[in-house]
Image 1 (cartoon, rainbow, N blue to C red):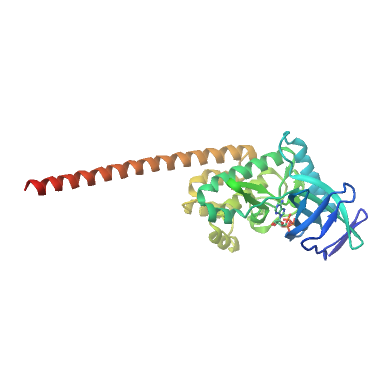
Image 2: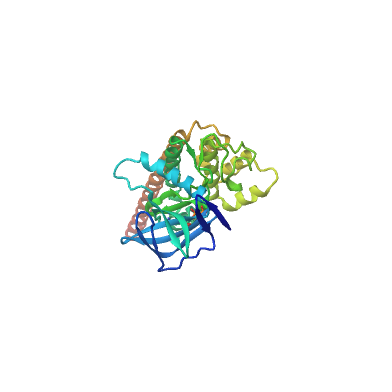
Length: 311
Ligand SMILES: Nc1ncnc2c1ncn2[C@@H]1O[C@H](COP(=O)(O)OP(=O)(O)OP(=O)(O)O)[C@@H](O)[C@H]1O
């Protein structure tokens, strides 16, 4: 596919191997390709090394699309508090084989998908992943944007369960039609509302994603059935031992009744806390039971010993 715009050509036959070096035309940065990280509809992403540090560098397939991703990242960076390293690091063009390409450099997230993370570290991390995602959505909504294409591939989880949103290609100004979406997570696909970009759109997608990481097969099955709906999603939540403790949150997210991501975040954290307290109580009562059981065995053994010795 070849698209042109603003005098810069992007051809997605572009292939950069390990060791290739790119020079930023305007800022003079030197980026050595370590390896490709992935590619999608909006571009190609490479792991690069710049001044001894690793970054992710995205070359856009379409100038306008890349520019709108950059605008969003810039608006988030401008609100970040001092001392926080911005996600967007550099913006520039490079020339390769006689052609100009737009690119931007962002922090490299060394991570894995939410599913992989939970499989490796255990389901106890589930609630924390939700906390991180809701925090980022809250910030984005406050800036007047909706993430749009929230899905498993667009979240990377790094150490200590830090879930990061990546790929800002679907981000849409609140009030417009969502630019990019994936059926499974789309409110319209579940006949649960429009594709207008409002905070509730992201919360619906997040609910589907949080169902998916625990109940992948059941969700896939439901998504193919003709009577798929938000009510059916909620029924799936209620049937699931892992999701049931969060059913109040899912009900509100799937029906669009949260006033915003910040309210959703508070609700998620309070369900998370009451769940942890419940588990703590269960743990201490099982510890008490274990102690009582051990004491009974010891008493029984001592009684038997005494009885055998006396008789
Ligand atoms: N900051 C990052 N750190 C680590 N890996 C990244 C980063 N950004 C992107 N990637 C990797 O590159 C892949 C493609 O990136 P991205 O999703 O931004 O491309 P895209 O063309 O917008 O894709 P899509 O078709 O899903 O919209 C991602 O799935 C991820 O594996």
